[in-house]
Image (cartoon, one colour):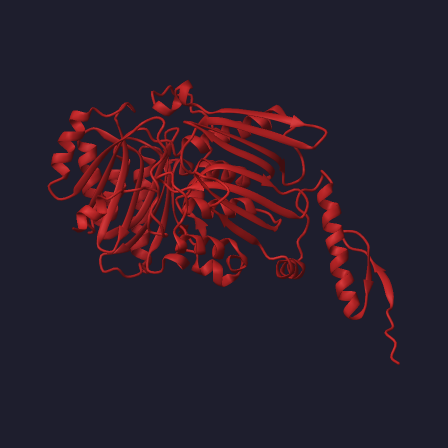
Length: 491
């Protein structure tokens, strides 16, 4: 008979002391010890996120892989997506980002992530308000949110909008941030056209007189731009345009992206770093700045539970939850519980949060800053008035030509999206007049005739209660829905 001799000994670590056993049992008990330490640490208010040992995390994912189910039977007017997983930093944003990139409208959501497990339920519909019934879409949801989505191969197969050389292949991603003014987008696109750079995809946001844009460009021969001289000239000219008459380098900057950041999240990060949430003190007539359109944000503290509760009530629109969760995550706050609901034109969202260091929002200054940042995140994507949807054969200078015509007619662009599908360029511009007021429809009709000679144009009113148009899918497709515009162009 063989006897297994186990020699116990205690070791200390930054996470506390635990029993260490040699051999096979030692490995098992070591992992159990780590698990107990993690659970005990998460209970403490002073620390929100314990250290996750990579070995333990992989081991936990194998034992308890993420589970996702798509339920079309429980609710008569929407699809229920239920997701359970081991809790980890940033997991809520990952899930919401995937659902948003699939053009889903989240009408309700229930989030709970206390302890070591993350559980949530999303009530979603497509852009037409119908259930998600397409088998390929359902299969994609299960794969992207399930165990395969957590693997390296799963990440590679997930084609969301990201910024960086590695994902876009033979294209370069350019990030621009600066002070907005009428005609600025036209000047930027004119510089790119003069240097024979074609804009394959782009997204432009403006808020509080600041502009942030991410552009994917390549040269006229569709080759990678590896000539440092050309890039240097581009950077110099773009910086000159962005800065205008000001010499301060902090006013504007141009950079070439190398990371894997989601495009919409990157725009949020750029404007947040630019402190666009701070009021410039300039009175504006923007529609989304009037009191009736401003979101109502209230922050309270629940002492007995150790949470700060952020309540948001505002007009509902697409991607609203993503914008708020993205901002809270980038501000280093952790969402432990959340309830999301939409009633008619309005949305109500409530988040139970703590800072990454475990603290609640204790000071008036911190509370005011979070309130301003959430309000800015909501308003960056608000676009009301008129949108122009354009479709034409893609070519170098197409964006420059269209934006020049808009500028010459006294029209400014508050938000824009550019994408390329095959040989077709698809553009959407949310426009206002030079004073920030709605554009006269007579000017729009004259504009349609002028642009429509070479470009198919669709004019669309954006009512105050309407949700933002849905985005087409893929990294090179921006957050806009073109209806049957492309289909009519191709026929």
